[in-house]
Image 1 (cartoon, rainbow, N blue to C red):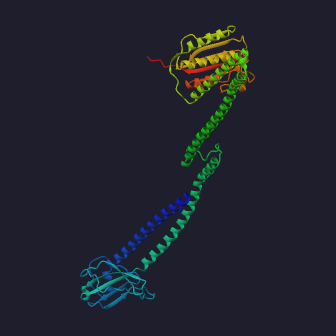
Image 2: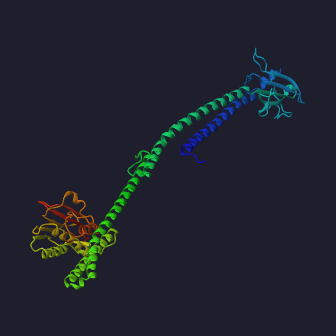
Image 3: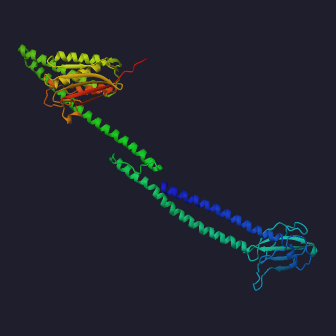
Length: 471
């Protein structure tokens, strides 16, 4: 049977207290018994003169002063054959003499003339009393043996009272300890029960639940802090997993939607050719041209999706020193050729070098410039700037068009998202341009953000860490 933590603690505390009380009680009992018996032994050792006097001898020997024997002390004179020649019992007046007598062994341990033997204990004739006995041969009685037997009644009574008192006190202490330990263990385990209840709710799906107490002042509180930290990480990981799954589902749905259009067009023009478009040269040329255009569009879309997937998987890019000033200048030159009617300016006073993939960084600048050209009126100026600040390279592309609604600013970098749903795919693309910008910049350890341009419009800013310059 497996005991609960409460039961094991309670049994452990009570057992420890019981052992402590038992050891202290036995030690106290033995020490008191030794002390009381030692006092009686001292009376036996100093009672020779009093014993002689009690037996009628007038001879005195040098030694300690005579002692007064306790009530019931028996003094006997034994002959050589062990017969009792004389008996004296110490009894106070007006007290009925005790009938208990010591039961002496057949052979007494005599030490020598006038030298008492070591005290020893014998039983009494009443079967209850015990006596402490000593003996010696006495010259004043012609070598007969004198025996002194002091009853241990008072000692036994005192020890019995001590045993009873220790039993009562020990029982009371054990009961009080059990009650107090139970209360303290209940109070101590209450936080653990609350933690268990919270853990059950968390297991049921409530990941926002936290355990209590959570404080550094107690061991259980520190456990609560550790559990809450772990729960926060689990909740964050679970939220990220759900968000990733949601993004994946949306990405797959959007990709399917985007691929459906060129596939439908290719299928339709293929059907046109099969039904006899070859009989009409104009229709045949149109069908082949549109099939080729949609195939190119679909290939570009697939390549863009593959790039985003690779960047999300953390695949390494080519890393070498790249001059952002040169990339920005080439992107501005290309935009001026495409839109000669626009005022496109570049601010870049000196070369700015970062470590990265030249092809992908050129793709970033190209997508930002295309985004500004496509989503602003024809003659809207575009301003490009390249600068550095605190070991960070900053590239900004600012336009003065209609700008972005606030609700679209935080979603503009999501795949397949279009701030203007009314735009066609021919003019607005598949919605992967800014997603590629965000993924490439993140792969380079930088970040991209969008803010409102002063006076109206949108400004996209890319921040990348500068390349470390070797001495």
